[in-house]
Length: 190
Image (cartoon, rainbow, N blue to C red; front, side):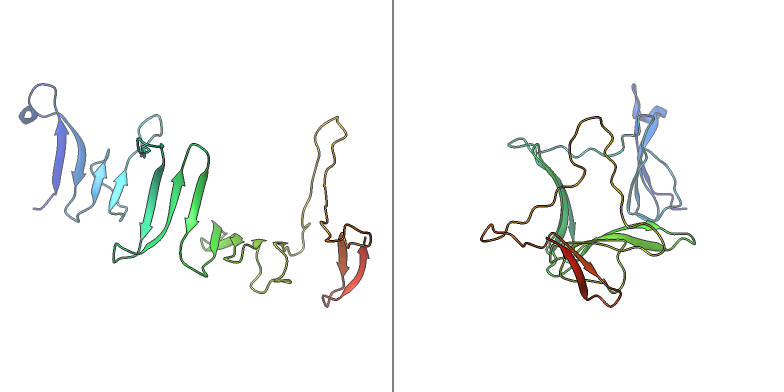
């Protein structure tokens, strides 16, 4: 019976037993910290009591560490998760593609909760047809409040700041616009 290959450690002699540290099972899965699993992922790492499972060490010149994602040809890079001492970034390198954030809805299906479009727009609770495609930040909701802000402090800092950088710096710049149900502007605060 093909049970796979195990890698073990023993203080005295590897032939006298020891503990299994990694296993390549009969399906070709590499299991680290586990000897069997029902999951189908090619690489599986079992966390220990401290919950640490995988560490990516940064390169010696600048401490940058990266987890890259490639197409099946192993040469076309789709994107990466990269950490530096100055920033963390999740990059998507496919032109015209969006970045989605999803959660599992009731029934087990995935629901997109936020979408960053390739154009730089951010849609929260995105609808299949957004009510506007021109604003940078778009929040939609059905039968619930859209947004709330709460300043939890005793100082007099503002809860919301709106700034319009008009080219002439003059008056009459629209700060807030009110639309009716058909999407037409019916009022503004200047």
